[in-house]
Image 1 (cartoon, rainbow, N blue to C red):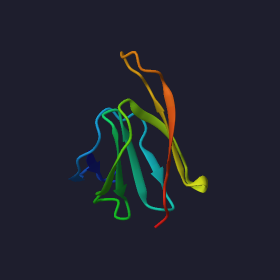
Image 2 (tube, helix red, strand yellow):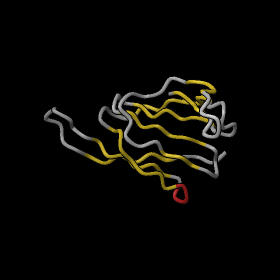
Image 3 (spheres, rainbow, N blue to C red):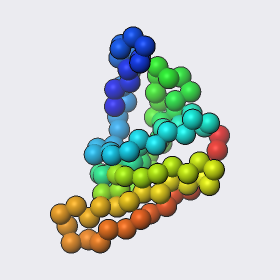
Image 4 (cartoon, helix red, strand yellow):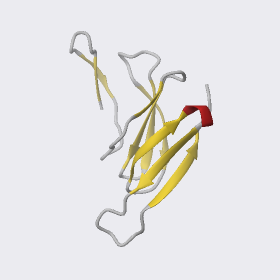
Length: 100
């Protein structure tokens, strides 16, 4: 992932991230960005310094889980799992998140 300053357009840093992510999920209050990836994990990033995104964790999910919603008041992330071109069934998975 490349981080760009929205005022100047300058690239400020870059960090590794999951592949095939449809929905970055941003928690403003906790300064966290969650990136669910179709490759089977969620990247979690600290955004307290907006010009220097920092990876804090990767959490295993499941292949195809790349679209989701963040429910910060319920401390949950809900992801839709797409079976893609496999014979697997679509499903919904839920992850609990913690505060700082």
